[in-house]
Structure formats: structure tokens, C-alpha cells
Length: 470
Image (cartoon, rainbow, N blue to C red; front, side):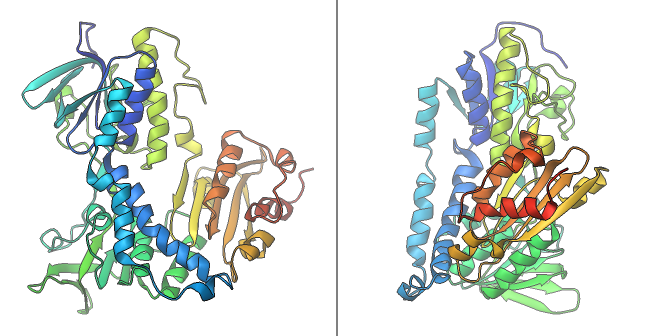
């Protein structure tokens, strides 16, 4: 559906003022466009107040004390556990006490208008907020995603925590059931176990099952070593909030499990409800090209989680930068760099998505897993190496355990996937991402010399395991 060129209130209206929406708006504004953001909650969005920032703040203190305990000399200096109140206070500080004045000030300094309220499409290039309709040459949807609640009897009525409630918790429960073995479930298991909560994780499949199989094995072993009860397979058949406030989970075999609180973390879906997509004849399953333009339109864009391509903040921000410049190029009538890896496209979505799970050990991966590469019919060879055998890792912590794996396209001698599991491996990831995006061949990688003694020496060990290309 197209829009006629008429006088409009803005060149671009962005619905959704989270990190992704801010980046679309900022990128377009830098190219001279008149831009407004519509936001119904807090400017800064999920990542700033209920996801990335508060969750990592909750995790960091536990990681620090565990890291110290792995090193003689530091271990002996630890005489107590975490101060839960101090951890929660630090978390709250990172959310600015759930106030968005700082983010609003940034919008003002960037020359971006803020429209408070819920925005919905009212026609091509038309956005309705309350009783008023605003017009624009282009509209970008950046509304993120919302939790998926499994169809378990009683779960909706139980008032179980979601990811928002647990990252904003004002107290540490004595016991906690976590339903879901994905990223949020495993991270919060580590965070609250370190705070003294008795944690049980219920997962239908292996933890972090979308990654290489050894990933879930390492994370499950670490959780169990922390005293977390990890149960793979059993699915609840009913959830109830009891009169004393506790949660009871019932299983098919007649057994039950009880805890003070329960976290439901079983996935997310694009937040398209109520956006008025039906008004402009578009299905909720948004399909976009690499400039984030919605299929069948010349004015509507969908960026970040809402388009379902890669539900990660950093990837959404990457899409947003490309989309903002693409929108500006179209509005300004300047050439569009739409070729692979061009200025106005999000090519990395297809082959080079980096992801980190801030468990302990950390999980860092980019590109394809072995299973995904084989499904695509790529002729591959994989190499793995024990991270604990690297000198830098053994210095980093006594008893360091971890693993690294490369998935290599044998025909082109290029890395198409990399996975690292171990303490503090997240910073290894960007080198792998660069190798994939830059299509750096294995023979050239031999000249990228890792510093000794660092954990990054695993790169040399992986290349040695593969062998020198002839």
C-alpha cells in the first residue's frame, strides 16, 4: 500500500521509544529528517528498565564473588555472602529508578519530538495517538516483543512473575521456580541463587537448546554446582497461587512443587497487537527487506524484535541504524546502497548474529551452529578445543572449564559459526564476528596472533586443531 506525497507533520514517525526506536530516530535525524517518537511507557524501553541493564546488574555481583572464590588468595578474603539490599539498590540505580528524564533529555538534545501515548496506524503514513492523528512520509514500528505465556491451566491467574517482575523485584524470595531454560531463565537462576534463593529450573528441553549441545551441558552442570535444582523434561499441568501467597506447580505424575514465587520465561513474540496493521491491510507476521521496509508498502518499516528476525537489542539497534539512513535516503532522493553489506541494509541478520548469555560460565556465540549449517547444506568441518587447556584460562581461575567450537565452510575456508563457553568469554566474541562478517579465510587468520597468556589463545589452538590449509 502506497502513500500519496502530501504535506505531512513529520518525515518519520517512530512508534516505540526503546533502544531500537531511539536509534531509528537518531539515525534519520542526523540525515536531516523531521522525526517524532511515540511512546506509551518509558522512553528507553524494555532493555533500559526491565531487561538488559537491570538483569546484568543483578548478575554481576554473583559473578564477581564466584570469580574471587576461584582464585586462591582472593578466596580467603571472602567472609560472607552477597548483600541483597545493595545488589537490588545497584540494579535500581541502573534503571534511574524507572524514570526516563535522562532519555527524554537526549531526545530533546537530538531534536526529536516526543509524543506520549499509544500509537496505532490510521492509514498509510497516519498515526493515531489518543484523539489526534499525525502524518508522516514514513512510519517505523519499533514496538519490541512481549512474553509468551504457555497454555497451562491456572498460570494466568497465578500472578506468576514475568521477566519484568523479576528484574524489578523489591525483595529476594526464599524459593523460586523458573519455568523455561532459555536465556532469561538461566540468567535469573544464577542471579537469584547467588542472592540466597533456593531455585528450581523446569525446562522441557536441554538448557539453551538453540545453541551447540555442549552449551546446555556446561550451564546445567554449573547451576547444579550452585545448588540449583535443574529438571529437564517434566512439564507442569497446573499452576496455582495458594492462599498463603505461595505458588504450587502440579505435574502429570501427581507430584507437586511449591515455592514463594515463580518466573515464567518461555519465550517472546513480536508486539504487534493493537498497532492497526489490519487498517492498512498488513498481516501481523511482518515481513521486511534488508532496509526494514515492510513487504507491500513504500512507507512502513519494522525494526527490532517486532519484525521477528533477531530478538536481540544490539541486532535491533544495528537494523535501526540501517533503516534510519535508508528512510532518509528515500525521503531525500539520494542513492540507496542496497547491495550486500551496504550502508542501508542489515545483511548481518542472515549470517552473523552475535549473542551472549550472561550465565556463569558465559555463553558467547555468533553465526550458525553445526546443526543449522548442515540443514542449509553447507559442506562443513567443525573443530573444538577445551578452554581449560589454554594457559590464559588456567591463570584466570583454578579449575577453569569451558569449550570453544568453530563451524567452518570447507569449500571457502571461512568460519560460519563460533561458540565459546567459559568464564569471561564474552569478549572473545567480537573477533569471531569480525572474522565472519569480513569473510577472513583460515590462512589469513593464522597471521592474527593472539596475545599470550590470554584466553584468546584458544584461536591459535583451534587453528592448530583444524590444520594449516594447503
